[in-house]
Length: 582
Image 1 (cartoon, helix red, strand yellow):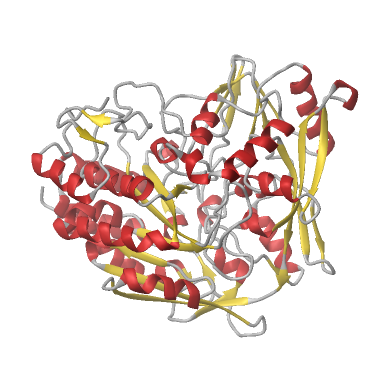
Image 2 (cartoon, helix red, strand yellow; image 1 turned 90 degrees about the vertical axis):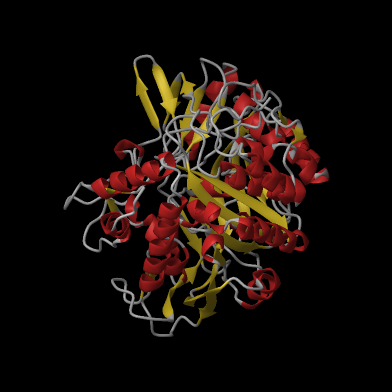
């Protein structure tokens, strides 16, 4: 397939920043009719591509209404799941079990944000959006120490799945480690009215708070979250686009030197982008904004066109086309500072200095405007835009160097086979501090994220699927990485109980105490929490549904080494629709 200048221009148009408009807001995750309700995630497709159903949904607006909703479910022995306004989770954590199950949405429980300057804390209803929380805290002269890069999350939702930024300093880069108190609504006895609020405070209730900080929604419904805050500060950011030579020897120094630093690695392009990111005093001049390119509004026609182009490259197995696309994408990111804007409108050069709240999180494609309705987030499912998987693995620092060297070995065999990752955001490398949360990191860790093409049909293999899945298996099997609870295909959670050791058992003790009837558990959340295999069906292995044990064709064990991956590739089985797993 020839890759013309027209197609390159199409990719460039996809990346063009639209300064003057805002986009169509995402669909609500819960939709109901006379037969019941369905709940989806932000991408409108779960990992198994199957619908999630519930009998009804309720929208409490106060803590009292939230208690009544839980009490009703408890009294009538109903299964319950909490769903947020954004539903950004990839795993099926928000899906309940049973035809009579109910959903509790926190989308209208979002009115209260209380700042206590003398105690350096902020308390928010669980449905408050991250952007609203950040703006109110900064308007009062304070900053939140960390937050995820994507702002399309609610306060309760982001801590439930371990959302994080990047930092080994202070309390660290994980938002749950900045939590100092939580109100949780749990089932209760009939004499207690079938539901009650448990107020949990750091220092006083450490057993409970270490479980509830990352709860996956299986302990109860988070009502209020209290976070530590700091006096307002600014940040100064510079991106250094350079060679990836010695990346395996420099990542640790970078994480220690720069409080909010990260690294974006484009392995096929042999490029590493080091983010030099340090705090600055609040009175330093600068009104910079981080409007990350991947989270900006895009014209709907352009999003459709880019998806169509990527499908064409997949169908024709055009590695060369994908590599040219990766080159164009990387060049544009370098030209535009990857969405940084010195004055809130344009990128004019480094460093970009602005407030913590404007540089930490972004997501301008979330917000609507009456000016135009033909732009949206590029993955909006209504417009057949981007569709992708996301793998996120968390490594102990001591294991990460070996992973980087293994990926380099894969890359050096045939670099163009990794261009499909570099079309998106390469491999994002971040740093998070060890945590006391039972389902958090027990030691300082390095986190990677990478996105890659997802086919419209479950039975359609991806181009270079063998190499990408080998990276997953090297991370989760060979190098012992833990999965991010709110991301990943299901195979990433296989054996997860053993990876958390005694802390996992401590979490289960609290779970059995707070929810003895397992009202908030479901078959899907159990599959994630306990890393259980799913039933086998056509396409399950291609979808990463943890139904792979061994490859029939060559009678090899599950691929766990670079050499095995290269062997399978050389045999010619890669990308074959006849590749079968049992």
